[in-house]
Image (tube, rainbow, N blue to C red; front, top):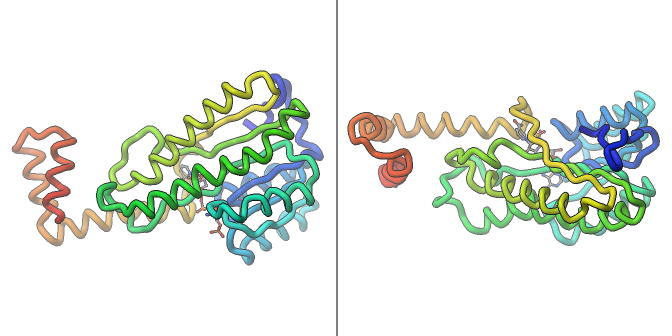
Length: 250
Ligand SMILES: NC(=O)c1ccc[n+]([C@@H]2O[C@H](COP(=O)([O-])OP(=O)(O)OC[C@H]3O[C@@H](n4cnc5c(N)ncnc54)[C@H](OP(=O)(O)O)[C@@H]3O)[C@@H](O)[C@H]2O)c1
C-alpha cells in the first residue's frame, strides 16, 4: 500500500518524511518501524510520552531516523503544533498515516445509551482531528505534486456491529471523507487511501471483550434467556429483536 506513489509510479520510501499518528504501540508502531527500516524519516505521534519514546528509541537503535511528538490528535489546539513540529523535524512530509483512533468509553454501549458528548469525542479523534491534519499537509503535497495520505479504517465502517456505534460511524465517515478527498485531489498527484487492517490482537481490541461481558451480564440477569426466547419463538426481525433487547436491558 505504501509503495503506491505519485501517478501510479512506485514511491521511493528512502529519505521520505512520514508522519504516523498513534505510533507508540500496535499497528502505528509497526508501520513506523517498517517505514523507518525502509529508509523513511518518521515522526511518531501519541499522547503518552513514555511508550512513544521507547518506540522511537527502538527504531533509532536499529539505525532508523525517528522522532517523538507527544500530542492528542483529538485536541483542536494541538493540531497546528503537531504538524509544525513534524514539519520542523522532517521538512517535507510525503506520507501521512491517520492511524490513531479511539473506541470511546468502554465497556462499549449501545448507540442509544451513548452520550452525545462521547460520540463527539470519538468523531473529534477519529474524523475531525485527522481532517485538520490533512488540511495542513495536503496543500503542500499538492503543490509538490506528490504525497500519500492513508486513513486506517475498520470493518466496523461497513458492518453495523451493536455497541460499536460511535466508532463505526466515525470510521464510515472517515472512509467516505477519504473517497471524496481522493476524487477532489485526483489530478494533483496526492493519493488518498483508506485501508482496513483486519482484526489485530492489540490494546484497542481488548475492549471488544466487553461484548462477552455484556452477554454474561445479560445471562446473569436472565435477560439473555428472554432475548433468545424472543429470537427463537417470536419471529421478530433482527432490528425488532435489537429493540426488544434494549427494552429488556432497561
Ligand atoms: N485492533 C484491531 O483489531 C483493529 C481492527 C480494525 C481496525 N483497527 C484500526 O487500526 C488502527 C490502530 O489500532 P491498534 O489496534 O493498533 O490501536 P492501539 O494498539 O490501541 O494503539 C493506538 C495508538 O494510538 C494512540 N492514540 C490513541 N488516541 C490518540 C489520540 N487522541 N491522539 C494521539 N494518539 C492517540 C495510542 O497512544 P496513546 O494512548 O499514548 O495516545 C497508541 O499509540 C486504529 O485506527 C484502529 O481503528 C484496529
